[in-house]
Length: 227
Image 1: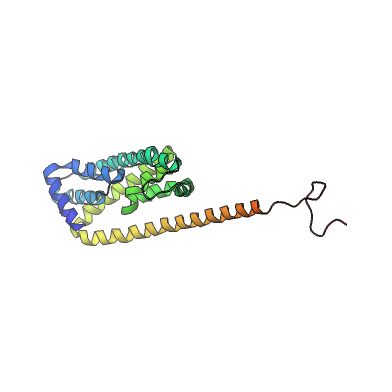
Image 2: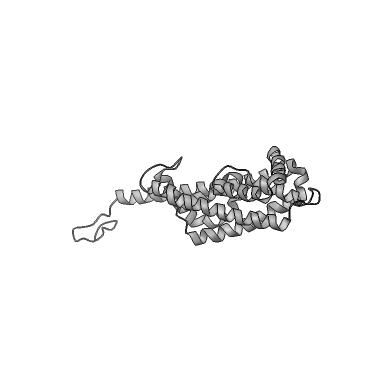
């Protein structure tokens, strides 16, 4: 990633702020673009050590706007295309109609916090918004979590680049460790939800297989018989 960090500095020198805007926008829309690195590099270039060629407040603002727009584009793509195919019983990439039911339950319970923290995890940041749209998460709830997370992410990444961009290899290592912790929490929640869903289905199946035993008068038979 350090190569991308240096590459972004060259692109900023040649093209300026559009590099930041489209880098963040495309990543949050679902494309594997190193948007986080773009923000870190922009924050570094806004610092005195980095030359102060960019304005730190404008970097934060553009990052926030691009993140919100990109996530909403990803959300719409998931709602419009992926969800429609899965509801028709078809597959979409690695998703199946059965996985749609699990995703709906997960985002109903944990959608707000997942979307808020998703952008801090590289892998989830790319697919989080599209997954929320696919799962049918209500757009107002998505927008609140999305905007809140975008503010926190834009400010945090810009300031990290501003103060620690000169030691990017150490910064990248620290960010990677934090991302793994958040990812582990999300995985644990997903597994717990799957187990709960499976046990609930199993309990319902057992109730169907064992009907109530009634006596000739249509009343429930009690243990021990009538006296």
